[in-house]
Image 1 (cartoon, rainbow, N blue to C red):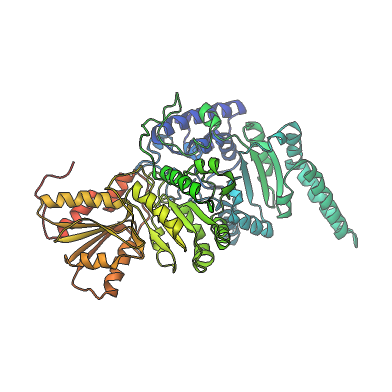
Image 2: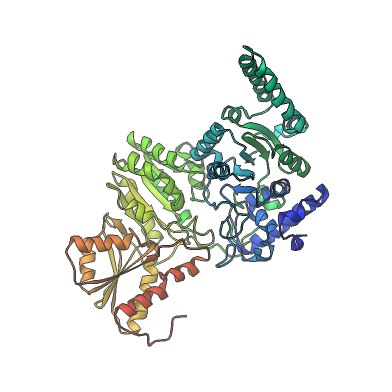
Length: 625
C-alpha cells in the first residue's frame, strides 16, 4: 500500500482492517530501513498506530501535528510523501531522522530535543487566532519528555489561555497498563462523545442562568465531575492545569484511536489524550529490549545483532568503566545523568553503585543544580550529559556551579559532530559556551588513555571542571602520561608552521603533518589538551614558526581557535598568520562523521590543504587515499 500513498488524504477512507494492514506494512518498512541506515527504531515502532489515527482524524498539513523530540516520526514521514526517499534516511543529503520544516509541509515544527512541543503548539494556536486563521494544533509528547520543566511551563500557559490545543501523551510505561481495558474505553467514549460534550455545555448554561445560584452550583458540578473522573482516571493533575483529560486508552487499538481523535477534534478548550503504547511494538527484539533499540546502528533483522563488529570500545564505555574504577577508591564520587544511563555508559556504574547513581530524567537544569547541592556538602558529583543537551543547563552551570566555584565534574559526551542525527544533536558549541565562564576548567582528550587521566584529574580538582569527548570508538594518537591542568603536549617538532589541535582533531593533525613532510613543509603539532586554562607557553613557541593553524570540532566563533587568537593578543605577538579550522557559521546537516568533517575541512585532507596553502606551496605528491 505504501507505494500508492502520496499523502494522508489517501488513507482517510480506509476501514479499520485496512488501516491495521497498513500499520503492519509500516512496521516492516521501518524495521528494514533502520536495519540498513540505523536510527531510532523502538520509538517509531511504538507510535505507528497512533500516527495513522492522527492523520486519519485531522486534516494535515492544514492541521498542525508536532512531534516532541521527533525521533518517533518515521511512520509520519512514510505517510507524508517520503516513502520513495526513505532509503536515504539519516544519510548525507537524504531525509532527516527528525521532523524538519524545510523538508515537508507536514513537518509543522522542527524538533530533536525533548519537551518543546506543548510550548510551540501553544504559540501556533495564538498565531492562528491573531491572524484569523482556522486549523487545529496537536502536540504529541512522550511520558519521558513530561519530566522536563518546559513541558509543564507549556501546559500551565495553555491551560491559562483555555484554547483548543490538543496534547497527546504517549505513555509507553507499563505501570498503568491495567487501566487500559473495557471500563476505561467505555468512559473515554462517554467523555469524548458529542452527547456528553453537548450535555456539559447545556448544563453549564442552565446553571449559570439561575440568579444567585449559578456560580456555586457550577463549582459544585465541576467538583463532582472531577471527583468522578479522578476515581477512575489518573488525570486529575491535567484537569487542575485546565485541560480536559481523556484516557488512558490503548494506543494500538486502531478503531478506538480514530474514534477518540474524531470526537475530541472539535473541543473548544485544552484537551489531553493519554495513550498507552508499547515501545518497539511489532519487532520481537525491540519489544524485549526497547532501550537497546531506542537508537541503534545498522543491524541484522533476523537476529537483531549489529551488522558491524564492535571490537573497540567507545569513549562512553571508557568513561563508564573508568568512573567505576575511580568510585571504587573514592566513596564520595556519585554519577548523575538525565535519562541517558545507557547512552552515557553509566549502566555498569548504576549496577555497581545503585545508591550513588542518579537518573533525574529529562531535566538537565535540575541535574546541574542537584550536582551543585551535592558538591556544596562534600560529595564529588560527575554529571554525564550529551553536549547538545547540556545547552539547556547553561544558566545553572554559570549561577549554581561556577559562581560558587563548586567541584562538579561535567562529563560532556557527544562533543563535536555526531553524524547521522544531524544539527539538533551535533555538540559543536560547548567549547564556546563554556570557556568564557570564570572558575571552569575545560579540556578534551586526544585518545582513551588521555581521557582516563583527565577523569582522574577532574575528580581531584577542587573546582568546576569539564571534560569533553566525542561520539566515537577509542582512537590511538600516542600514549599519554601524567600532566597538570593547563599543560599541552608537543607531538611533533616543526619550523615552517604549527598546527594546534584539540581533542579528536589531534590524530588528523598528525596525519596531515606527515603528508606535509613529503611536500617539504615542516609542521609542528601540539596537542593542546586544555581550552581553559590555555597553555600560553605552547602558543608562544608555535608563533615562532610565523604561522599557526588551529583545529577544533567546535564552532569557530568563540571556540578554541578564538582562545588561541586572544592569547596571542594578550602576549602582544603580532607577526604571525593564524588560520582557524572548525565548524563554520551554519547548522551542519546530517551524514557520517567522515563526510561532515570533510565538509567542514577539519579532517586530514582539510588540514593538509590549509597548511599547504598557508606555507605558499602547491601539492606535488599524489593525494592520500
